[in-house]
Image 1 (cartoon, rainbow, N blue to C red):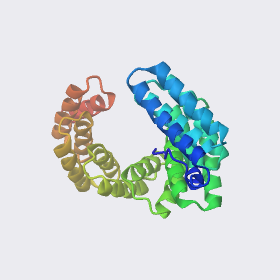
Image 2: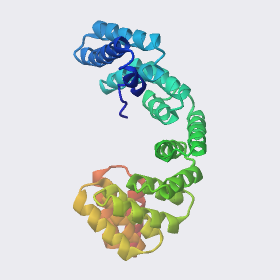
Image 3: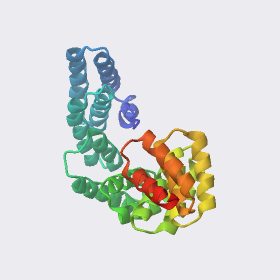
Length: 293
């Protein structure tokens, strides 16, 4: 998430209050230098500079700049793999953004901070932010929050919720292969195989080089007995990732669905070589062996 470090209100006041404007610029530089010092391993110096910047922002009640400085510093820590140190700063920044009516930033920062609430509680918070943004008619921010909500609902295995929030995103003009893939998976979990196939077709059209999507699409097509179309998707997936374990398994499933025990046996054996002990592959191999005799 890109957060601007300047404050437009302070810039406008610069002509009237040149001293405050100059000090604001100095504070912004200190906040930026704090991140540089931290990246160079000078943590005490970094914290001193960040503290000075925040002290000035607090003195002029500039909550946006406080939130931005904390968020940027926290995200830099997170980028270094220092999640435990980053999380409190990110949550503090998220609280401030909520206070100044920027819930879309709060949602992203809480996601970056990692879970402190249960998954269900996280979803509820995001849903509340989405409701607020929807009421305010802020479509750009609403799209960002809906994307976060869709992912959170997917993690919570709320399949109907995934479909609902993804559909709202599509109605707002979103064209995203990952969204269509989540929709397809959710439809499949609800045994809506036709709808899942349609969603996977959209996902593949938007992300044609994603071999996993093509394998998953083939899996649904096999379930619908569209074996020719499934074979085409597997051929495309094979060109992208020829050694993927699931490619061999899907080919084995395709052969089994077509009653070709020889090909089923060959591909099930290949799947087991790629991933030993695979129950699904062993089941197909057993079926093929029995069919042979």
